[in-house]
Every structure is written in C-alpha cells, then in structure tokens.
Length: 403
Image (cartoon, rainbow, N blue to C red; front, side, top):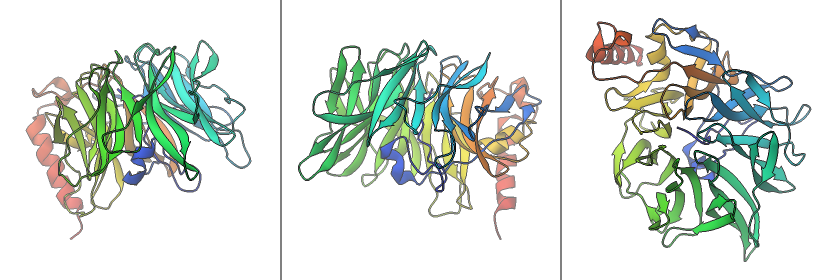
C-alpha cells in the first residue's frame, strides 16, 4: 500500500517533494497514456484530469484499490490552484477545492477503508495538514510552540495520522520532528539518538507502527516507532549509507525505502537490497516507495543504463523488473508512455498507481486487475515461464546497451 507520495516533478512547475527526507534522491516525474486491456486482462488507463487543471498525480490508494488520493495540478501563475483529488472506480476523479483558500493544496494519502483523505495546504508561510471526510476539511491542529506541520501517512480507518511538525529554534531556524495525531491531538515523537530532526512517512493499518527518516551522528537513517520501543533506527546495507523509510505494509511486517543508492525492504529488523535496473551506470539508483498489504509486492523507481527513471516492481520470484517492459510483454499498449514511478499499491495487490509522461506531458496512471507474479507458470505467464521471461529480458537489455 502507499499512503503518500515521494515524487518530485519537473523543475519548471512542480519542483518540490512531499517528503523532505527524499529530496536527496534526485527523483523526477513525468508519465502516462491510454493503454487499454492487455492480453492478460490487465487494465491500464490514465488517471482522469479534473476539469480546469493540467495533470493528475496519484499519491495513495485504498486497501481494495477502489479509491485513490492525489493532486490535481493547476497553473501556478495564471490558472486555477492546485487542489486535492479524489478518484473512485465508480465515479472517476473529482477536485476537492482549495483548503484555507490556498493556491497550493495537495492530497497526499487515503485511509485503507477509503473514507478519509489527508493532505497539506499553505496558510501564509506555513503548511497546515488536514483530513477530508464526508465532504469537508478538518484542520489537524498543531500543539503550542509549533508553527506548522505536514501530514504524510494515515491508518486504515483514518483515526491516526503521521507526518512532521515544525517549530523555530534559536537563530531563526526550523526544527522538524515526527508526530502521531489522533482526535486527542498531535504528539511529538522525538528524534533518533543524537539526532535533531525526524519525519514520519508511513503507518501500519492498526497504527501500532510508524516509520520514517531522521538524522543521526552517522547520517540519515530510516526508523520505526512503537509505543513500547520508541523511535529506533533501522539497519543499513553499508555502514556509511544514508537511508530513509517511505512506507510500511498494512500488516506492519515490511518497511520499504532506500539505503545508499539501492531500494530496500526491512523485515524483522533485517535489511535486504532489492537491486538495480542498470548494469553499466556507476551512478545507478533505485528506491522503493510502496508495498502491498503483506509486503510481498513492492513498487518504486530505478534508473536505467541511460540514467532515466523507470517505474519498477519487485517480488521475491522475479526480482526487480521495469514495469514498462513487463506490461509491454503482456500485451498492454503503452504507446506514448514512459512509466517512471509506482507511487501506490493497494493492500490487496490488485491495483497500482503512479506517474509518468504521456507524449512528454506529466500525468498519472492506474493499473488494475493486477495479479502478482508467482513461482508457478500461471496462465498469465504462458509457456515461456519465469525463467524464459528473465532470459528474454536480459537479452533485450544487452541488445539495447550502447556498444
């Protein structure tokens, strides 16, 4: 699942990241086109554009894939403001309007049951978090001493939210610390030992585990927080790595993010690298943003041999694959599309959402009726099987590699 977006968009209009810990990842986002249904029953389509806006970006998805949160991008100079977007499988996309009359209002996540959207909007110079339920906005009030906050993650029923809140420190600087919000108020979760800031980025469905990123004397580290154990750093692939957590599975078993230049998952406090797409670029990177409810399917972005960002999927049976190639091999028409990031996976694993470029224009996409690859050759894999597909993919990459 995915409850918030780490996507950074093109520099001319949307140069910002909803997650400050991810700003160092040099992410880009441009993508989408109408692909229709492939020969394996996969249903690929563009995320609807809200009338009067220019593009739609998905940021979160409900447990069954029927509701998606997002951003309807406006025109920052001459046109309508950015606004939260709510998409349903039955009604399509609708804009929710401006929050606090702000020109910059973004929907960043949706509860597992699909009833509650969270987001952030500017009020003066500070961001104010909100949740949207039953047709109305509710501000998440910050505690005394805080000047603003940003929501990033939400639990199954929308009753618990995490993010980061800001306060001023001597010298006029800002200090950021992760929070846990309930109807009783916003609680500061503190920082890692020896650290000065933290960001809560994801939360399990039962709200018992919060994950995020914070600094330590050894650099940025991913963390997990529980009521009993407090905030604890997660291990890294290499001791000098910077690391961050993007999201957590609904059941709390799997945390996803990055360590150094590689996408990782953490299971039971053990870290596993998920690999890279590129076999030749010394600056290759990958990062995982989202996972299914039990942690078996992971989505994100990885650079190819040319350094371009590509949407990727990972599971233990096939490893990391380029979603563009994977869908094309299954008969999905991606003409005009470059899928660059998977931003959300439903808890049941049936629906994926992300961003990419359609004929060079930034857009969002939805892939439904998805069935995760399994070790056995199911009807959707044809006679070629997993091993044959992997060989085909390898040969194709070698043929495309510059001489």
